[in-house]
Length: 321
Ligand code: ADP
Ligand code: MG
Image (tube, rainbow, N blue to C red; front, side):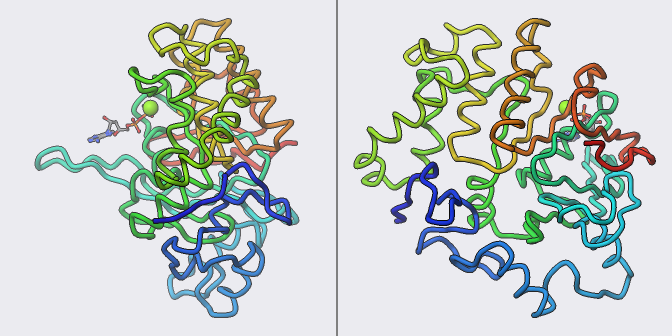
């Protein structure tokens, strides 16, 4: 069993110890996750070895990948301009079908995008256009039928279960329209849950006090310091979403993925949640990818991309920062 350090304790270089590039010694060490390599070093090594995203390939998609990873000019709807820093999160030509009996439903028909560190990106589109499907693929909660996903230039979509879980837990936080809090647990316990799962039992018991302080601190930060012992049914919708945001942050993620985070809230509560997300983006430099069907919410993001019939509408252009 692993004996992980607190995800909230930075290492000497200021990286969170829970970073996917900073695994515990017994974490599965795949080709992309070889223990302890720093971000640039790991990527450079793969480039030298010809296994990274710059590798030339026969179908010419290396150019598209390079563009989306920020290595070349990116003319794609989801891309950036030459000179931008390398993408933190990129997707290349994602395809996803669902099968309903004998009928195949194509949902994503080749979606490519890149998100750079600290950006707030809104994904908009009609109901059923594939927004949640895309977000789940980016979150590695589901696998694409075709295409590739990279975090910091490291391909992640084809990792096996445990590696993917470890990477996701250290890298991503997720919030949903309906919060997905566990009803039997208090607010504090809900926020602690990802840490309980990430720790072995003894590690958790030994560091319980510190982890509880971390969770309580996050709840304080989202304005729920006075609701630690309440259960979800005793909270308003806005409070539940704030608890869900605290839970998403407890693993010290680099990217927050939000699926209609205000979709179930009244106007005032929705505005508070958005303000909180903007604060996290501005103060913690947290990258945020947010699905919304509300144009007034999308307008507040740095950049908006629109899904139409499983593809990105052209012309969404580079970030306007
Ligand atoms: P959005 O979030 O934009 O409303 P979704 O990504 O949830 O859209 O869904 C896109 C399409 O895929 C819809 O037509 C939906 O019915 C279908 N779909 C989503 N999930 C599944 C599933 N698990 N099985 C079959 N069809 C699905
Ligand atoms: Mg949806």
